[in-house]
Length: 302
Image (cartoon, rainbow, N blue to C red; front, top):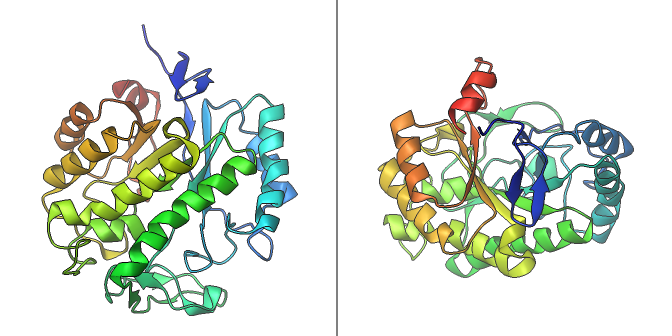
């Protein structure tokens, strides 16, 4: 009988159990987006999980969403992460870095740059800045020729992650951040090959994943998705069609796993599970909800 504590082969890793520590923003990085000794202690203390996925790590300065978050785009940042991964491995654990480009969910007061996004449409609500919450600004719409550069930024960060000792990376394609913004027709008003049809709206996600696979290998690459989620004002239509198309394309890349949030009805999630042939990491409750999950809900998805 399969249980949460049954081992599992994930890409090139042998997990001792099926408990995955989901990424959680901590905003505890040092100046310059550096990892710290306290982060090494924090993650090492959790090394008995089958897999740890870190807090969101920006792949570029413009990709920074919140103040106090770590990066993976400078040599100094890579060096700062090595004690973290070494501490986890010393305690027998496995750790992936979550690569998170905030897109429009950012502010010039945080990184000195105007946010970018698929279109010049502001996120809903307020974003965090060093001086407190402020209304989300209108981002600059990326030019067509710029879009591949931002897809490639995930791959560049993944290379640095492996250099820093991470076992792999998870692309943050959920919760209203850049990949998610391309998927939603109300945040993606583009008329070029990255907008309009389902095929075009999934293109950025597929290109980011493909570039990452080319950089570090499919067995080291996962992606997190939130089908139908409405974070930061994104509104996806034709959710089943959209994610069926996306998962079909991602399946051709042979990713290590897909990480789904319970942001759609269970029948939709089960339909998507049938489409995805590989390993599934299931987060059975809404990330920002008040409900706490438990063993029964975890067992339900095994």
